Length: 378
Image (cartoon, rainbow, N blue to C red; front, side):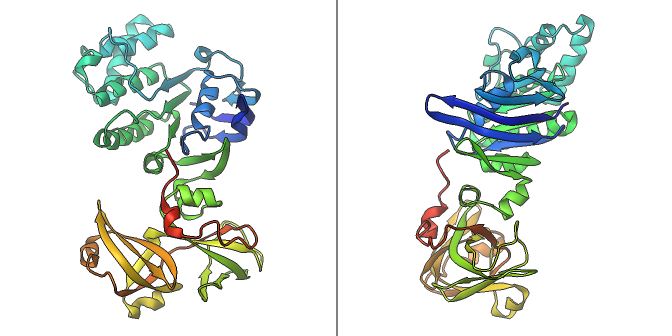
């Protein structure tokens, strides 16, 4: 295991700044997700760490060793790509053993180590199977075992589940988390899927336009987005343009267009009085309540329901807060009782709101919150 330290890293492709002066430290033993839309620079950053791409400027350290210009095979790391990359002419056993022979493992220790790796990825008894005899998920498990077999300092996963179907992705992402718990190997996972990142990572680097937009624990990024991009990319949000009226132990924000005031005690920074902000309310932080429970919430609103629909495991309610479109996600058993509430008014308590800096006077960047709820392209 080792930590990874990146200092002012730059990589350009012609006029495109794929990695734009990135500095970050990834702690030893962590599972860090590098998350963002296509073209944000996340794979380029990973390939610079791997040595597959040479940066134009900056430094990369793995542990105490600078590896910026070092050949990939000298960096003591394992890498797994998007598509399963088993050697098709070799069995599962030989694929894993190959990585050990390449690093001059003692010949007598190889069978035991391969057996350990097969147990780790739940492929006991399949050591003689070739790639064509394995499912896509099983083949990717072999590749992960091969990458981990020589006990690398660092495991790099470049969207390792993107070629698998949804059910296999759900299964394998949990297995990757289990493998990380058992090995403790410092792991970097590149993904555009926030569900994957938030399910297993203990740290998230959210990238946008070659920069790290926000870094932190998944729950912190989810509850406290610091930029409009973070709030738009992560989850489903409603945005209201507000002005900070009071700042202290409690922050009071007015949305003058609606004549509504919001209060919060939680914020990632102290906003000064008069600061323009976006009041960010996640669709799943809106609870439908009886009016007699209103005192349990700091912020209570009334929403006129336009439409309710069952989508997957939740009901999506679209309505209006006065004249402002609003979306609500409802889970749990009560959701089935809400499918016929179109045309009614409901009382809602807000369990959490976040405040995001807003360009002074800008109320049109998100003129229609519902239209902003779509994730950026992946």
